[in-house]
Amino acid sequence: MRKRSSYEEEEKGNNDRWLLTYSDMITLLLALFIIMYSMSTINAAKFKAVAENMGQALNNPKAAETSAKTNKAKHQATDMQKLAKEVNNYIKKNNLQAQVEVTGTESYVKIDLKDSLLFIPDSEQLINGNSEVLLGLKDLMLEYYSQFTHILIRGHTAFVPGTNEQFSWELSSNRALTVVNYLTANGMAADKFSIEGCSHYSPAANNDTEEGRAKNRRVELYITK
Image (cartoon, rainbow, N blue to C red; front, side, top):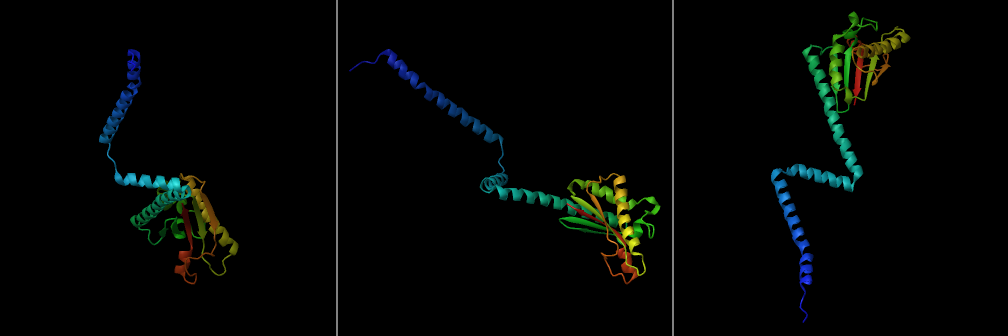
């Protein structure tokens, strides 16, 4: 039997040294993970939500995109509803219930203002050239302006037999334009505005009574997200 040389013994010892290095590395990694775990607190609910979203994104990218858009829409809807609530509070605070109405949904806010609150009779001129109500509404709208897609200003008149048809069209259009000009002159950007003159063709009430005609003479702010 051949006796191993000292060189062969040394070479075998060198070949086994990588096991010691590997063992040391595994030990250090284990210690690192233990330290990291002890320094962190895992929120199981959040971890589960992240895992589910990641799985959904990997398995169905379109569904994940739709879910993200839905969550964004819910956030915007909350802002629109909050605007409607703040406008309603403003109306109550200033005792404007008989002259201003607000309707709010997840997709729009509609504010109706009677013409007697804003305009000189049969004119597109603002009373005294200004409107504290429009300024108050402007301040509320500016808080949510980034959420708006469009602000449509509609002018409406009432049907009175014998009224000149051209005058009715012009009055409704010019009143809508007056409101836009006033709002933009007082700090609102004009890029999301448009106007409509509806004459007496979109009544809110019956034109057979003076009370109904008073409701029909109005300016409507229709805000969409």
